Length: 106
Image (tube, rainbow, N blue to C red):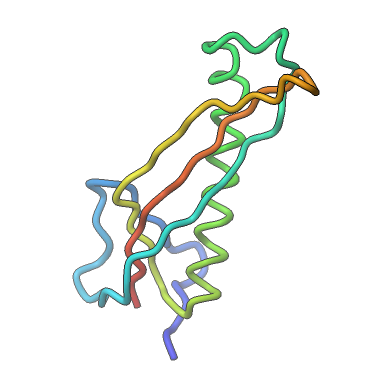
């Protein structure tokens, strides 16, 4: 069974930021996250990005932390991300949805 990272230690590494050398790869995974929804009338592309980007970032950090713990790893190294704007015209809402590919390390 893997040991969790020490309290306050970094567990999520983004793109070129590499996990510790002693970390052992355990497999590649994908996680998805969604930002809060904002009224569509106010959601120009720039406004949508500004209002939702931080919320999406916080949500994916939470989801990655949960997955690292659930899968018994110590670190996640995000390799790729795909973020797109979504709209629900019936409810006049818009939001960001992201899909992130990462390697789990023990």
